[in-house]
Length: 291
Length: 291
Image (cartoon, rainbow over the protein chains, first blue to last red):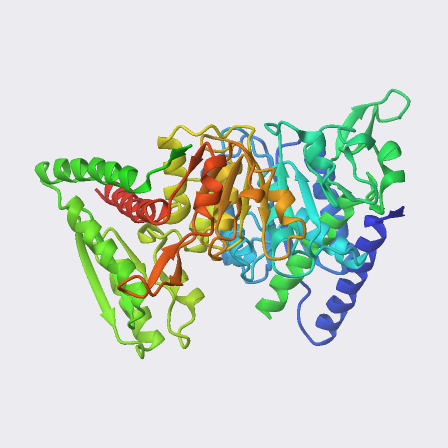
């Protein structure tokens, strides 16, 4: 069993990006610039946003954090997006989800100009990815693909089972893994809450990607011997023994499953850091195009 | 075994559309209007286009056929598209594929205004479909879903195996069958040319959708007892006994497979007529929005 060390690979990716940033600056260009819109004070959102801003600083990116109270009106938010769309000093921006209930996510996401949509959430980026055209690939699936690539995981002709069909992980993962490229060319099965014979389906996975948000859901009896397991779950589980009162756990029962795997990602330190690194990667792509 | 009679269901769908058209006209509106751009003289393309124009006439749609020689320049084609985009008397239009080699398909498809893209090929329509948002669903997958619905085929929790990963059939079929709706909520597997254990995969299909363009590829030993089989293939096979020198055959060996099925589509008379009817359905949707 080999650990796919997302923390280490993310560090490597960020170092590569930092080198490119330094070159850009020494060639007289401004550094890439990412803006993050954060609404309200969801603790998980704040944690993610802080990690993104910190990663920007570590790689030499400029970053802007735009914080708004939870009662911000949709029209004010859309106006802010319009300003960011037009701001020539900005390469990309994201709106941290979830949004307050009075704001319609769909309208907000579609307002972002696709060339700055470094989260890859705009329908035109989703569509282009599906069609195999040049587009921003959203950060979590993009980070997973990068991780598989850096560990040279064989994918062609393998059966990839994706647990979960969410718009931000399951659905795009399925598209990416079946593409006619590397990583890709997998037979892909998407399983979800309505799947009947889930264990049987999971056992077919040469590559198993768990993205259902249920702590320790995937157990050893559901995993094929020698499988590659990618754990996308980041679940907070109450834990009185920890100072903060909880611990993070994935969708996979790591202790039980890992002995059967050829490769497996840990939680934390697997997909999470890759997601942030891939967001920087997307911002760098946007910056290159803008140059 | 029950035949899913695409010809009969398409007729029914077209009759429903014709009734609505008659109402529109009696309410003082113009009928829906579809334009078709045909370039060159590919015999298959001509056949399809003629069938589409004929279907328009039969349902009371206005139709326009814009024919161009194969040497038309890309810029002239794009200019024509711009005119159709702006034409207020037109609800939708399609460009019959394939295009001559000197014209880039991607550029042409992205030039069509999404609100008139009744083929559903524009990346923004593909993306919206993937995200479960309101969009044009392209005619072949849309027609198949309609056929399953009219035959009340159970889909929830079923395992749907899609053979083929093309942008116009396999990929969108996979998205539609896994959606959280009816028809949908299937566990979905996409298999293709790189799939290793194809027979084993196919045998899992409660619903098997064959879209690989290989005549009689799916044989009885690959099909689960009681499966629902949808044959998307339209292959021309040489046949000296026919006046025109060929016969049409699907991707499924109908004679061998059909006795094992609960439902199966024939070729011809299955998916083909549904595709045309669904194009009219999309044009009707566009016309309703424009009204």
